[in-house]
Length: 402
Image (cartoon, rainbow, N blue to C red; front, side, top):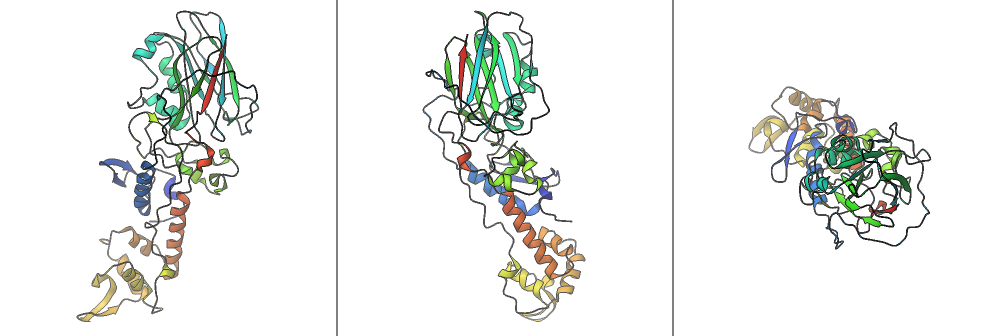
């Protein structure tokens, strides 16, 4: 088995399954055997993030004063995707909707927009507080894809129009912090409710969602951030929708010089229901899951280094460590070459550490592989910075002008 840095994050392996929390089955992010405990501990640490008390409902909306007309945001390569809209069967006067991103560096992906009546809110809401997210809502939260919501609601009873917004101007890929976007919607007495939502590139399954608010001239609403509850909040570079070049320049995820940041692995399950997002917090890299470093082992010999390494790792199998046992406690320690040969000839030694031995030319090669794996684990848990955005504050503002 070859162990190359970061390769364990690039595919999903059906061969490796483990249990995390309440017997939740996880397909690993490629079967890297030394990552299991690290992922478990990281998931558990992420679940301990404090809840944010906003004193607002999950579908939080409240009337505000007038909005400023200034906005900012950087430029990034534009995604190869076009905005689209269904035809409104009812027509009617137009209202302008302005969405402003109130965060510092959190961006918004594709925006889903729907104009509808109360029937949709009652029978087919986009999400329900405290309930599992629909597949369409999860797709928006995890992959920034608004098309499934568009396809689901297009032509549904009670829906006047649906649209997706992917063009944010100035060749922007996302609606960046401080930036705003304007678009028109139809309004009449029968269809007078607005729903919209956008996923976050720099979060696992975060979403800004406004559901069933009245379309009236002069209305302004603030939007709180939600967690779709479909993915563990690992906060790692490789588990969020953003690609490496999307991250703010000062982010550690932007500094990674490998493909790990582009994986967007969604395989680790979340909380199971839509709820207020807890935000991004500092989560320490697990420390007790690293492999024992060779230079941390006191070596008394230049020819029995494998034996000394495995003894320091609490292995005490005489068949493994000794070429012969003369008496009680009298072990003829295997030479390095003999140790490799013994491990290669005993397939029942199933611990992944023995695969490293089998794949090593000598002890120094083995130590290099240990160092590479430890570096991989450390790099795998480079996490997003809490300063990117703070969920204790509203994430967006929506203004309506008719």
